[in-house]
Image (cartoon, rainbow, N blue to C red; front, side):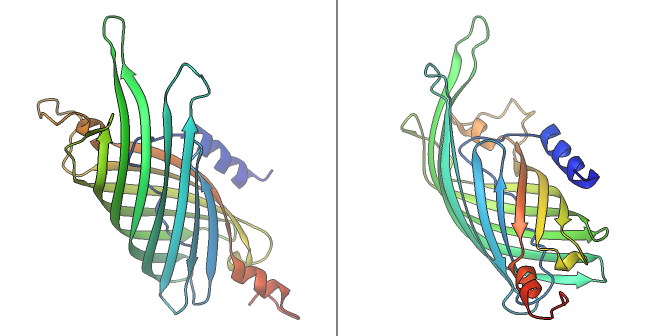
Length: 267
């Protein structure tokens, strides 16, 4: 196994944060597209039985069209434990990208999505106290905007950062079938990532890419250290910050098509 790939896998395992609650942040898109009629298809896992599939295409120069969907089903294997996390979502977005020299790509996207998530778990319950039980059930719409930058270090590795703001609007939100007094929240969601391009030849002719990403999601205006503010039951738990780690694989169809063209040299 080559050193970049080994470092990628070790870093992912070392930073495995499984942020599971009724709002599930999705990783930023940050597509590695640099020209018109390029496309990418990415399959990712959040290392907690949650999976995501996305596709991005550039029909015209500097224009991006993107769609993604994902699902989660993580039930406890212990029949005495009623903990579970379940859900699914989809997103659609439009964006733009620009090359800055030979090594940088910057861009942005905006879009909307919907999700249905359920989460049941208990926290606390030390010695003389009883645990607090949550059984959240939520449906929500979301609007998001994202900016990103990618630096290509060579023909193998690229590094990047992205920042997304997501506005979540709950259409249904209950805890143990009782309505929760939270209609919306806005999340701040930065992400760092490392990508390794597999294959031979120049960077943009290699059809397969591996990625590891590390991100967080926090609610604007919410301070977890402030215990003086009184929230309705369940709201403080929903507003808390979450982290995640993802690993994924990306296929670039336009690279594959170039390679099978008779007499083609990948350009």
